[in-house]
Image 1 (tube, one colour):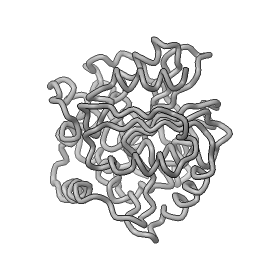
Image 2 (image 1 turned 90 degrees about the vertical axis):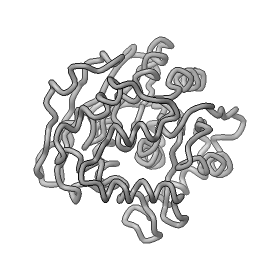
Image 3 (image 1 turned 180 degrees about the horizontal axis):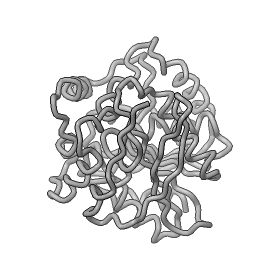
Length: 300
């Protein structure tokens, strides 16, 4: 497997993100290893929040959330998915699959870090991956915060705005990652924040994961990931695991999933599910402090 590793110097000037990365190796399908980065912040003996980002961001997205949670005595583990952030980046789109993304994350979180009593915080692909982990390893989790995410099976069509996004990513000669993130926010991004989102991708070949991800979302019933996602839904629909739905009020991509999750997942019952106002798809960027307080209250 041909892999790109972003030079450390690319991350020299990150606003409000002073945590040092840690690294672990996960298996690649050719028998080698990929280096996966993560931030581990807060008290080592504190309750664990697993913060999973999506497309095309990285753990930098959670910087404001991490600060609030650490101040509340919570241990934050925020991985960079393979293909993103400081993690290794296979340079061919065919090297990425939904199943591989789940397995790489599982290997880091459950095998290498051996995390237990985890509260998942999943947004965008962080939910697509994280909800699979919850369903397949319920004994490791204490709760879920679903924030602008879902678990598609391909049985229902995606919204037109998502198809527009997918077509734009597939057609772009040069993929402007910072512009994609900015388009998913309700508030303008400062220049140094835009630069931080672009930092993992100094070369076009490093963006294979970002280009591949939209095509990995199940959009038809016979998608390779559909069966596993349906099985995960069956587990979640019978689970009493506390499950908080914390969506923003300005996400046209995933907004319709909030009432579905509240209706179908028993663990949502009896909880007050907040709507985070004035935030877009990347609510961690638009309202990170507020989301952090919501998570801390839920975990407390």
